[in-house]
Every structure is written in C-alpha cells, then in structure tokens.
Length: 292
Length: 292
Image (cartoon, rainbow over all chains, first blue to last red; front, top):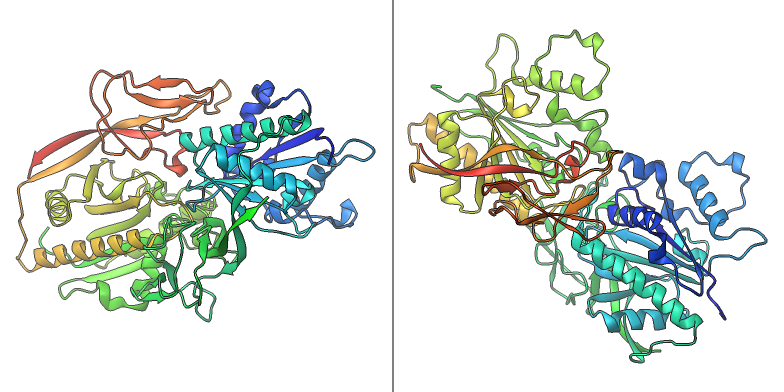
C-alpha cells in the first residue's frame, strides 16, 4: 500500500454501544478533530435504526452482514443486510477511491480494557498495533483472523480494525472510556498520517498478541438453557492466564466447573452480554510475542 | 399485621436483569429452598415475554404498570398492562388470602451493591432492613416512598420491597452477585419466619437510610439529546457524599459541570442504563440514621 487516501470511522454498528455512537456525533459536530492533511476521514453511524431504538440490532447483528453476497436488493428484507450494503457502497464506491482503512468502534461488558482487534495480519496493521501498545501500555491487541466476506465490517478493508473497550454495560456512557477511546482514534489517525508522510514512528519491533484459538460456550442442559455462570474467580480476568484445573464456571447449585484443557490459555470477552445468544461464554486465546 | 401467610418472590420484572430470572428458575427447580414452616412462598417470573426476548420490556416498563386502574381487560392493548393485571390476580386473588409480602428482584448498572428498596415506612419493613444491614454490612437501605397505585410492583403490598444489586450489565449473570442476592432472599424469608414464631432477632435499634429527595437528569440540548456524561469522579460512587462544587457531569467537549446545590447529597442509581430514556442520570438522597 503506497498511500492511505480515505479512512472510515464507524460507530454504533451495535445500537446499544453508546461510546461509539456519541463519538460519531462529536466528529460530525467537530469534523476537524478527525481530519488529517494527507487523507480524508469519513465518520458514520453503523446502524441508525438500532441506535434509535437503543438495541444491538433490529433483525440481526449488522457486524455479521458484510458477506459480499450478490443478491439483488429486492431479494433482501433484513434491515441489517440492506444497511450493510449501503455502508459498503459508501466505503467502496464504484469508480472512486475506496476507503483504505476502517476503524469500527465497539464496547463490551467484558473487561477488555482498550483492545485493538485486527482483522488480518497486514504488516502495517501489526506495526500500528505495536505503536499503539508502545505509547499506551493499557492497549491490548487481539487477532481474530477472519476470511474476507466473513461478515465483519473490518473485513472490508485490508487495514480494518475494531476498537473494543470495556467493561461497560450496554446502553450507558462511561466518560473515562469515552475519552480513552477518543484518544486511541486520534493515535491511529496520526499514525496513518505519519505513514503517508514517510515519518513512521518505530518504538520497538515486537508485539504482544492474543491470538484467538476458539470460542467456549456455557454448559447447557438438553433444552439449551445455560446451567452455569462465569466463575467469580474468572469474571473480569480477561488477558490473565487460565491454568489447567482452574475454575471456569459455577453452576446455579454452587458447583465449580474446572478448565480441563492441557495448556495455559488466555480467556477474552469473558461474559459479554451479546454473546449469550451466540453460544459464546468467552474466547480462548494464546499469548504470543511476535517480531514485526 | 399478626401473621405473614403468603410471600411472593418475583424475578424478571425486567427481562434483561438476569440474576432475578435465574433465581426464579432455581426456586422453581428446588422449591424447598424458599419454603418456610409458617408461611407459603410463591415465586414467579414478572415479564415472561421480555425475558424471552432478552429486553427490559415489550411495550412499556412493567414496574410502572401496577396502578390499580379499573379499565376492563378488553380496553387494554399494552402487554405489560395486561401482565400487571395477571400478576395482581395471582398475588391478590378474590376471596382468598392475599400475599402479605413481596420481594421484587432487580439488577442495575449502577454500583448499588446489595440494596433494599423500601416501598413504605412500615415498622416491620424498617426492622427487617435494620436486621439485614446488621447481619451484612454491605446491605444498604434506600427509601423511595411511593403512594399505593404508583405503578411499582412493591406498592401492591404493605411489606413490599425490591432488591437492587449492581453494578451488573443488562443481559449478563454475575455469579458473585447471584449468590449474594440468593442469600439476601433467604435472610428475608428467615426473618419473616422469626416474626411468625415470635422470635424476632433484634440487633440494634437504629437504621441508616438513604431517603430519596428527587431525580437529576443529564444536561440536554434543545433537541433533548444529552450533552454530558456522568463525571469519571462520580461514576460508581453511589452512596458517597457529593459536596457543593464537586464535579457531577463531563461534557463531550471535556468541560466539567459542578454540583451547584447548597448541601451534601448522596447520589444513587448513578448511570443506570434504563434511566436514560426516563430522563434520570441519578437520584439524590439524604443519609439519615433513624431510631426504630
């Protein structure tokens, strides 16, 4: 990639994740905040109807709808599938410059802190992630690689990333995390500006990465109802090592369920509200230090 | 009141407050847990449709629908108004014993800890509250007096109380708070059993009470949109004194808004998700120590 010409910031892909929603409102009111001299920055709401109703989505999760299918518009009746198509048309207009980079803003009820989720292992994304974690040690980097057309907004662009901050409940603003998210966005934009101007800050050549190795569901009964909760000793312990034999769930009858794997894993997205319906209690990851 | 004959425990009056929902499921599975020798205990789901959809309510907040109106059923089209009538028929059947006491289970995104909300100042409720805070110093007591027919479920009974625990996000279970809520319910039932048997435990004759003195809304612009967030220094500081001149809100432009009252107040329900739409950023209360 020679030059970054257009960057998109999307907030409110989930309508009840308010930090992204109110950051986009702020950027619409003060567009200079996100303009840089060497590229154009768009800011847009992901799911306006869900934002208006204060819910994650209307018909289905928008952030699983960017699948690049070829159905004609009149065959689509799901609101989020139509909205995904609209967003794609804005970010990738025919016969015009496409957006080179996407920053998708999210919050989570898990204690994910300030997390950068990389959609792929593009070298520039890795250097960006190393830079962000060098200037702010609270920044963590999670790699959840998805094929193109996997449905995630970030998968539309080679330089696609999500910012996930938490823990914050759905439907509320948290001022401290609002400010930290805002500063992280500016740091990403400044880094792209530096790339375009040939002045790439280089702090170190290693990056600590949490690499997804799969999702773990809650224990469930034959009717699909959950039988256990996240164990109190695991709650809010994202990024901490889980050892074989450590407690992971607690049944409603107060029985501990232990982690029976054979190696240390690093759980992430522990107890995210929106994942109950997806059958995900947490993700397991491996902690890796990679050279970049 | 001579004898408590029937007690009702209601969970899931709000469908996305999962601790109450899963406690009712547990009590349905193990009814002995809530039976006591001197009275009958009912347990029921408040809002089954909202529980199924994972939302607070379908049409309107159930916990504002117990108004005791006299409309005929066929004039009611709002789901929660019909459900409120069904619940009232269960708790107050004609020509049968009414429920003497109601325990309504809630969670909040505010850091309310283990909070007992008293619907009125009935002497037995005050003694119960003093007992609960004596056996567990984490228990706080909030008095938000409402006239009968004010719409709250707890207002249906002389011995009506709500248990509000937090901070917990909507749509998730928190195992630690689940267990603490469960123990608090058993302590209430045991106290009623003691009353019936003439063995009322008496720890002390004072009670620390947070008495509501009104709601405070977010600063809003002419379109009704909020202009500021809870200040980081106030977030999660429920029950702590707010002094004149202390910061209370932070605008999206990073300007502090100070508390301009003339006396110390004790904010509660700070940043409760469901109250954004009600125009409530927090309640102010006075801290009182009363003799009982």
